[in-house]
Length: 421
Image (tube, rainbow, N blue to C red):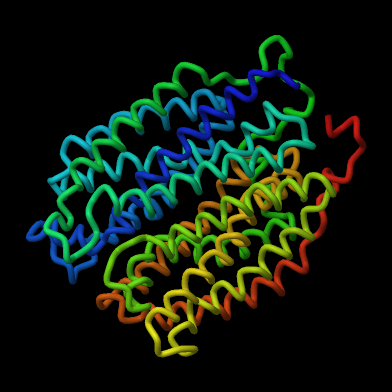
C-alpha cells in the first residue's frame, strides 16, 4: 500500500486540481475591470453578467456531479481523471485563445465546469486507493490545499496580470494575456495527469479495503445513515456559504469601500484555508478524531462571517472596515476550508463500504446547489441584497454548530494500528 509512486499521483492530481480552480474564479476577483474589458458584449444588469462565469461551475456541477461519481466508481479513477484532464486541456486553451470574446469565454467555461466534478469527486477515491488510512485525512488536506492555492492565484495573481487599478491607463487590458497563461498551465496539468495517473499501486493488486458496494446500493446505504444526512445539511450550508463568498469577493470589497479590485479579501481567506487545511486534517489523523475537529471548524466559521457581515456597523472608517473584513476572511478561510477534507474523509469512513467518490460527490453537489442559490440572490439588483445575505450567513453558521454536535464519531478512524497501515 505504501508505494512511493503515490506521491507522483498526489503531485499531478494536486496540479490539475489547482488549475481547474484557477479557471473557476479567473474573473471573480476582477469583475469590475472585466465589465470594462467586455463592455457592450453583455448587459451588466442581467443574470448573464461577469458573476455568471463563476456561477456556471456551480450550475453545471449540479447536473454532472452524480454521473461523474458514477463513472469514477464504475470505471476507476484513471478514467474519471483522464476525462477531467482532457476537458481541461481543450477548454482551458480555448478560453485563452478567444479571451476577448465573452460568448466564447462562456462556452469554454462550460467545458471547464464539466471537467471539475471528474477532478474534485475523485479525492477520497484516490486517497483510498493510494494511501493508508492513517494518512488519508492529511492527503485529502493536501488535495484541498491545491484547490485553495488555485483560488488564491485567481484572487491575487489575476488582478496583477489584468490591471485592476481604475486610475491606471491599462485598467482591464490584460485579460487576454492572463487567460492565455492560464490556458498553457491547463495544457500542462492535464497532460501530466494523462501520462502519469494510475488506478492503484503496481504489483499490489486491489487490497481488501477497496471492496465496495455498487453505485446504487452504496447510495441507498448512505441515505439511511443519520450522520450522513446531517453532513449533507452541513455542507449545504457551509460549502454553499464558502462558494458564495468566494464568488462575490470583489463585491464584498466594494461593500467595504475599496475601489481597487486587489483581491485581498478573497486572497487572505485562501491563505487561512491553506494553513488550516494542513494543520487541522493532520491533527484529526494524529488524534483519530473526526467529529471533534468538524465541531471546531464549524464553530470557527461564526466569528469570520460575523466580521464580514458587521464590519460596516463597527466603524465608519473605510480603512478600519477593510481591515476587519480581511482579518475576518482569514479566520473564515482557516476554519471553513479545513472542514472540507476532514468532512470528505469522515463521510468516506462512516459510509464504508459505499464508494468514496459518491459520498464526496453528494456533499459537493448540495454545496453547489446552495452556492448557486446564494450567489444568485447576492448578485441580483447589482448586489443590493449582499449585506442581508452576509447577516443570514451568520445565523446559518450558528445553526450549523448545533447540527454538527449530533453527528457520531467515525468508528473506522478509531480502528487498530494494523488497519490504519
